[in-house]
Image (cartoon, rainbow, N blue to C red; front, side, top):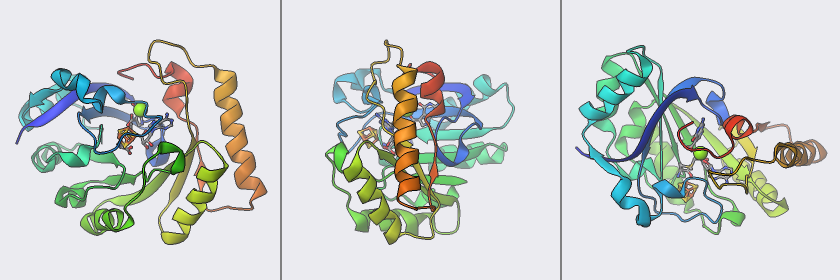
Length: 235
Ligand SMILES: C[S@@+](CC[C@H](N)C(=O)[O-])C[C@H]1O[C@@H](n2cnc3c(N)ncnc32)[C@H](O)[C@@H]1O
Ligand SMILES: Nc1nc2[nH]cc(C(=O)O)c2c(=O)[nH]1
Ligand code: SF4
Ligand SMILES: [Mg+2]
C-alpha cells in the first residue's frame, strides 16, 4: 500500500496538544480534503506541491523512521494534509511490532478502520475562521472507528471570538473528550521568524477568554514548536 509522503522528519518534540513536549518523528502525507484559510502546512495540501509528495511503501517509511530514531522506538506522529486519506494500517502494524507508538492528527472528516490501531487520535475540527464547515456525522464516524483503541482527544485552533464560542459548542457535543485549545498563528511563512511578542499576546488573549468565561474544561497550550522555530519546515 503506497503512501504519498510530503516529509518525514525528527526526532523533534510534539509541539501541540495532548502529547506536547514528547519526542516524536513526523510522517506527513500529501493531500487534504480541506482548504483552511490559515493552514500552516500548505506544502502538504496544495496540489501545486504534489510532485514533491513521494510514493513510499510502509517498509521504506519505517526504514526512514528507524534511521531518524536510531532504532529507538518512540511516538510516530502521522499528520498532513489529511492523513486519513491514506491507508496507514500496514505502517502502524509494522511499527507497533517494533515497539513504536502512533499518534494521528486529522480534522475528522474521513474515518478509517486503522484509527483503532492508534495510541492517540487527535481530532481537530475546524472553527468558522478556517472557512470550512464541519460534518459532525463524519466526525462521529471517526470516533466510532477509533472505538476504545486509542485515546481520542479534540484540539481546536482559536483565532477570534466566533471561534471561541464555536469551541464551547463543540465541547458541549462531546463533553467526555479531553479538549485542547491553541491560539491560531497567522505568521505561516516558513522563511520568516515569528514575532514572539505577538505569539505570546495571542496565547494570553486565549487564556483570558477561558478564565473570563469560567470555562474550566479545556487545556490551553501554545504551539511550542512555533515559539522555538516559527513555521520552519522539518521541526
Ligand atoms: C497542519 S494540520 C494537519 C492535520 C489535519 N489536516 C488537521 O488539520 O488536523 C495539524 C494541526 O495544525 C493546526 N493548524 C494548522 N494551521 C494552523 C495555524 N495557522 N495556527 C494554529 N494551528 C494551525 C491544525 O488545526 C491541526 O490541529
Ligand atoms: N514540532 C511539531 N509539532 C507539531 N504538531 C502538529 C504539527 C503538524 O503540523 O501537524 C507539528 C509540526 O509540524 N511540528
Ligand atoms: S485540514 Fe489541516 S492540513 Fe488541511 S487545510 Fe486544514 S489545517 Fe491544513
Ligand atoms: Mg504544523
